[in-house]
Image (cartoon, rainbow, N blue to C red):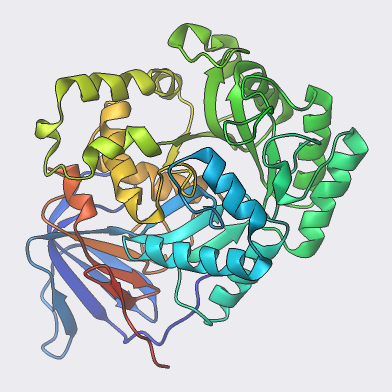
Length: 423
């Protein structure tokens, strides 16, 4: 839960556009009313008492704070996997914690009010989460898994939690839960960052994954699985993993293509609790760094990004719940650029700005168990808000033009600068 700040009752924020995070059509000449840190109304502006505390944003868009469901707070987003690995492995625990705090604040400054950290060294990010919750530093709400469960020599083994057999995997999951993990992360396949781990190959047998999921669910924790290879995607689906991270359907040789996707396995995805998390990182968002409008995107870049999204568009057409996240911290994927992933999603998924916002707010909250708490501008939700210049429903590139960010009804960012809060 986000730290409760002493918000003034009946704070009213007004702007020309409102996107509520549910996928509903945008509302114009709109307002959001906040009382005691919670949303009490969001919709067309209404007459108010003269003494109401009103903030007029004018030609701007109010939307829910963004939710990044896949990031690595301890990683430095360097220009190569090799440097990220080398820096993390040689860092002290103190340095890892400082990096995590700094990255969380960079994300908050651009509108990310909730983050799910999907793996760092041992339990250090639990300390970061607890410090944020206690108000010891200003940052977004954090969900953390501790270290990801991986094989000896497997992807991210240098985060310190190796487990090979069925019993070892269950023991590792219980260890993280006992330490305070919000969810469990498992590396179902190898990955690009860890030499020799083989991204296209599974790291665990189906029955081992199934045993892990069963025990994690018994302990009321959802399971996120890193899955790049097609065999790993199939196994994660059949094991009942809750969130399929990346879900890239690579061949054993690391080749990606729409012909590789397993339609029968996609049909087995249980939409009641399973979701696919598309991580739009690095080159899939680099073209948007200086783009004012999607119309200015070169045709070759548009087609390249659309090609990268082909499998995800297919899965969406089959009714598979989707979320867009970043993998922030990995190669060339800094934490302050999450809005660029939202812009990229419009192209990659061939969708609308309003739907792209839903995929990083309401849909994201539902996927990670925060529906009813945050992610949408509905009565009773935490007033976690992002205000951006212009109409983001008409031009999604406006989502990168941060004006203000609110946590629990308290303004914590203005023009990408964190505000000093004194209680």
